[in-house]
Length: 470
Image (cartoon, rainbow, N blue to C red; front, side, top):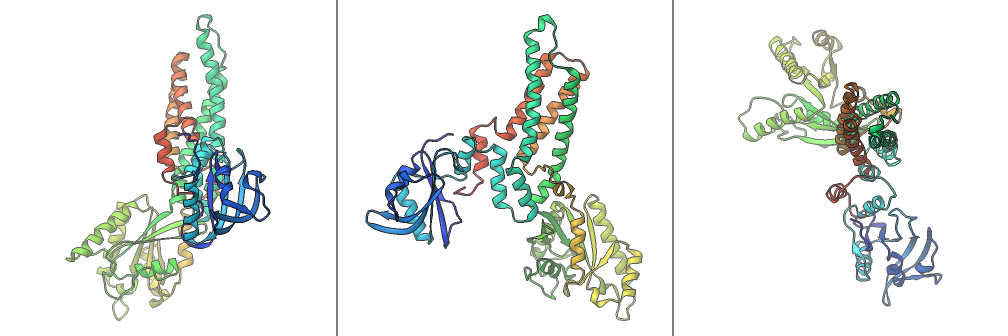
């Protein structure tokens, strides 16, 4: 996959803006850019020092396209590890297009998605997991996901893997040496020390594998389903949480015919709220499809908010309607039974229409019932704090390594499986040559994470998810 041509792409977001940056990288980057740039000081790009800026004009023959700043990065001292020129021009979409087309005419090729970062990986500027963290950093939209991406870019996760891999490799080398002297019956690898290393690797791998549950939800946002009967205030609650009119609110039951999703950051953690269609018996085909999708979303969610229209539980004289109340309790128990391992929040809405005594009466029967007023936005802060309490962010606070990438997670699972086989083999006093087979496989899976073992298909799949220009 190593290519020796010179590539060009817009490194900033497409569209009009104050400025735009066009990146050119490859062995001929300086030679291609030099003829189309006229410096204010008369210094050509070929004579410009590395890591310096120069003001001038991009010209096509005698026609001036724009006044720009040129950044030059010589040799391997660049993001990609190869000669690079970055052109900071005005953010007109027309200007961007003109400059890129001119560079292509002069010998550049349009960069593919993620090709700059791919070249950085191939040129040894970063390992594969660090390269993947670049995409995560660009996609981060809350403090927690940003922290995880920065930690991975700094190599926090792979440093651990590389250290374990090297220790295992050292022992593997000694064991391979034993095979060369099998007739002499010598032992170069201390079995007690090797046993201690295996236990250490098992512990580290198990912790990293367990961290994926936290890392995955932090990276992708924690899905929270808001469920309840029609017109209990689900859409109003969604709007209150988002602090904007995201969902249509109406007195007409069944207004929400489909799920509505949006994400906000609470305490630096992303939560993806799903306003679902009201659950009830209906003959309306469209509404029925929405209710079916509601149950699908509940299956996919990690937290369930059950919303109750509490004033409807009382008659005009303020007497509790026993039949209605029993039905509500039955629905709550059914949800808890169907989804026993999901955090469950039971909210009584429209609390502003109930007295404290009435609220207490209901809580005496359902102890986990909490009251809010979505319309008045009371109780929303307490709800957000309760949601945060479900997130085990201890590892994040302690700056521990957290796995967020499913490819890394799968490789760790396979590595642990092989290490467990090694442990089993040692317990059964298997021969060195049989132990060596499982050790080699464990080393292979370690190498998959950092990119020491790759293939074109794997790299293509990873970098295809990058944006053009990165």
